[in-house]
Length: 72
Image (cartoon, rainbow, N blue to C red; front, top):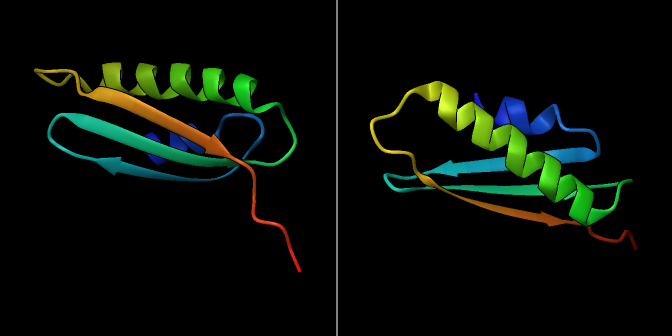
């Protein structure tokens, strides 16, 4: 569910979500928008999705955004 929310953010090419007991890690690759804008939108979208899960304790959120590897 969290990965689907991450993929809905404009500019995200791919995303990986790792969920632990106390932390959610999101790694995304952005291909056409500014990294800061994508990170802010991704942070907000995934944080809202975590709220909707209705967990007893909200896990911390870690978001990393990068560019795709160069070809050649």
